[in-house]
Length: 90
Image (tube, rainbow, N blue to C red):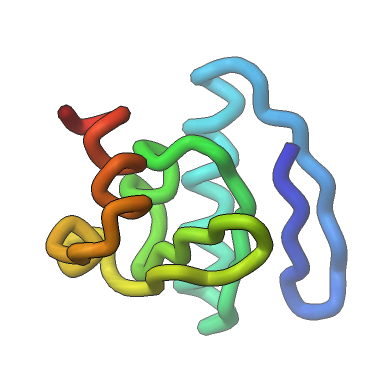
């Protein structure tokens, strides 16, 4: 389940299938580019975050432990961030 706010409108989206997620990704990119607004997407899928985000925040027990571009996040030394990335990218 993703919750986002764009220009004062709150959306809730349950994008379960790959087709739905790809459509959602495209819609986010279009909104962000067209309106020059920040779009916040909450996901538990690090691949999805890396695919669509300019910056990714990693949250552990309610605290942001890292926030950077996907390329820079891959260089973060925090063991919790490393463990998250290794579970997905080996």
